Amino acid sequence: MATDKKVLMKGIRYLSAALPLLFIGPVVINSAFKNEKHPLYPFILGLGIIAALGAMFLIYKGINTMLKSLFDGDKNQNS
Image 1 (cartoon, rainbow, N blue to C red):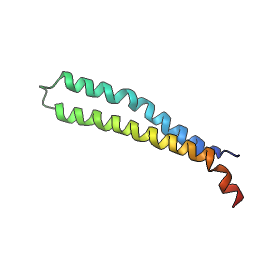
Image 2: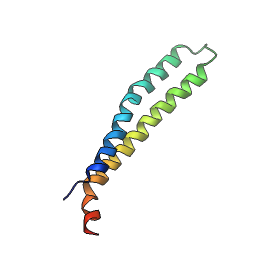
Image 3: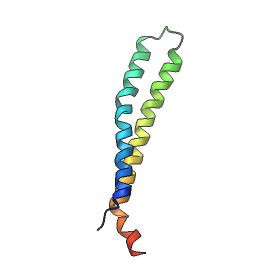
Image 4: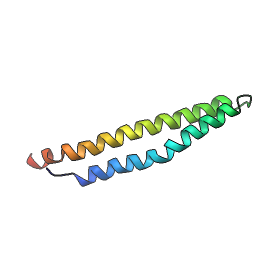
């Protein structure tokens, strides 16, 4: 069983991009809920939700890519 290291590194890059968003998203959402009367409340709340959803997507993409590199790596070499 061979691991495709380029694809594995791509998955690690996705996960490393998701790490800051995991912290930024909830902090921005919490900050938005503390300032509900501010005129930019909907924009800031939307920005926080987009950051949180982006983190979830990047985690999914990273884990999926890493698993692909681990389990599909030997298929490319036999062809």
